[in-house]
Length: 310
Image (cartoon, rainbow, N blue to C red):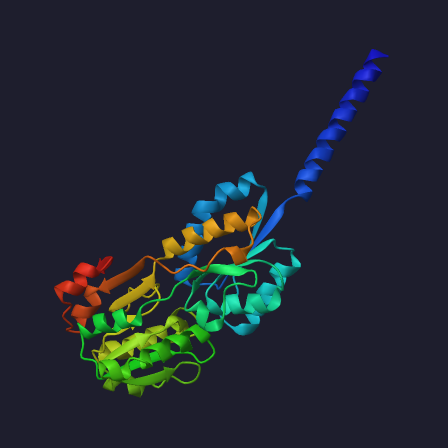
C-alpha cells in the first residue's frame, strides 16, 4: 500500500513538473531581427546589441529569430512577413530600407530601428516605432573633405531604389551654393558611368555602398584611385578601400537599441520612447590609401580621427 502511495506521489510530482515547464515554454516570447545580409556596419550594430541583451534573452526565455535578406525590396518584404508570421513581440530592424519594409508589413507590432539615416525625412517615429538614427552632419563631412581636396566637382554615388542613399545625395547638393561646388550624380542602379569619375575632385559614397551598390564598390574605388580622386564613405565597412569614412558609431547604435528593446519587452509603448540621435560619430582616415594617391592629410584631420589606417 505504501509503495503504491509513493508511486502515485512520484507520478503526481512528474505531472506537476511537466505542466510547469509546459507553461513556461508557452510563455516564451519571440524577438524578430531583420538585418540585411553581408553588411559589416549592421553586423557590428547587431553584435553590440547581442553583447547587451544575450543574458536578458536567456533569463526571460526569449527566442531571437534573425532574418538576413539580400539587399533588395522583395527580400526585405518577405523577411518582414516571416517575422510577423512567427508572432514576434518586437521586431528590430537595421537600416532604412529594411525598416520601411517592416513598417509596411507588420501592422501593430512594435518596431525598434538602428542605422536609419534621417528617419524624420521618411516620417519614421511614433505609430509603434522608435529607434536611433545614424544621421551625419554632411556640412562637417564636406568641410573635412575640403581640407584634403578642392571642392569644385564632387561626384555622388547613389542608388535610386535606396531612399537613404537619395536623401544623402540631396543633402550634399543642398550645399552647392554655400560651399561653391557642383555635383555629378552617379546612379549605380544601372550601368556604371566610370568615365565621369576621372574629372572629379572628390567622390562621395552614400550608404548604398554597403547595400545595392556594394558589388560595384571595388570597381568604383579602383577608378577613383587611378584618377587620384579622394573617396569618402558615409557608412563604415569599406574603410580599407576609401580615404575617409564617416559613420555613426555602431557600438552606440547597438547599445541604445538594446536599451529601448528592454523597455518595450517590459511593456513600454514605443511611442513613449523618442527617436534618438547619435552622440558618437566616427571618422576613419585611411592614410595608406591617401598616400598611395599622393594626397596629403592635414594634421587637423588626423587629430580628429577616431582611427587611422597606416
